[in-house]
Length: 437
Image (cartoon, rainbow, N blue to C red; front, side, top):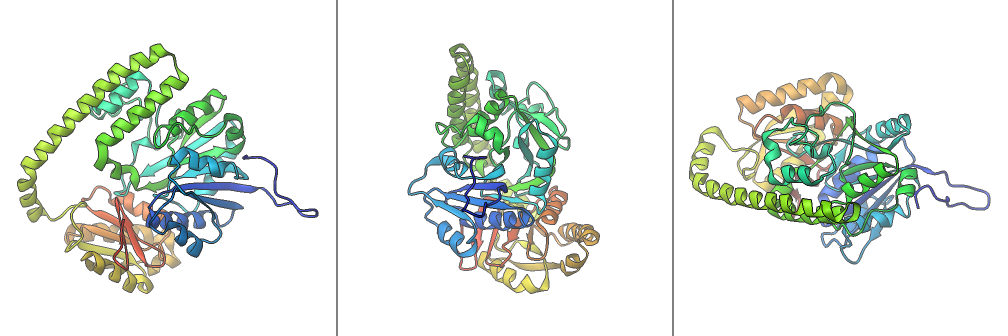
């Protein structure tokens, strides 16, 4: 259990870890590898233990961890035990003062862990902290800060009507739209993609509820932390990339139904049967509205596809267009350029523009704005629609800076692995041997 007794010998005691990082993974080998590369950087100056709980992946994830990240504590399951149960396996073994539950499709900044630890040390009332998340297009993810989805809140969220009033404290209460995304605030729900926990609070609150297989466990655990007298904080001074933020939209109705089921479990557990009855009608109505909107949306897309194709030929491909033939800018040092060109060739693209980051390696603070400016000029003047970053030649924090500054353009971002063996981006990954996910 967290905060429990330490392993010790007769004459030597192993010091407790500053942080236990727990990643539950299932068939996302390349995203996991990039995540671990960023975690390894973020934990350089800390006593940090890293757990990966693999839920019976068939893509070689376990072999990759054993080969490339031998210091990781790997728990390999023979079945998919779900998010909650897999996290609990590692939580029981964790010895850190703090515990981070982290999704495998995330990338953290180099100072993420030190800043979060400092924040938690300075806020002893904090049971958990969440951070600012951006998606694979550089856009802010509203699930970075959330409220408990009680009946009315759940209706506005699941119907999608909250989008019409994004700053309303009532209609967009679920995403706390009235709170500035740049301000530190007390919130109710910490996202499970990055849940920075005080081990003492975990010991008092208990493990994740394994009745929640995929969705809702973060809401339940956040609510239980509040019930123990702790505060949950949104800490936007730290940013991460969370690629899953937009890929779930491809299965939007499936997500809505799973979320609905998770909310019923949550309400049955914590509230009266009267509250449950109040929730069923508005939320089931919201699902019907969302389903109807989805049907209408698909119909309009079929009708507009021919017109969209003609527009694309005029203004150029967007971020969701096939990679083949798409104009690409590569932000890399000279030493990585050949490997990245090889990866691009696998996708049918090539480096049309090369922006050197060699100068950045000697003067990161002074040249990142220049790199952003040159990339923006290439997007406009040369119709670049894909940007490739090399973390071998740039800090992950600088890559996040670039993505946020360039996010208003219709472009696709991809990140090459530090060893140049694979590329990842929103909803896709490709390796030098042509394999992808």
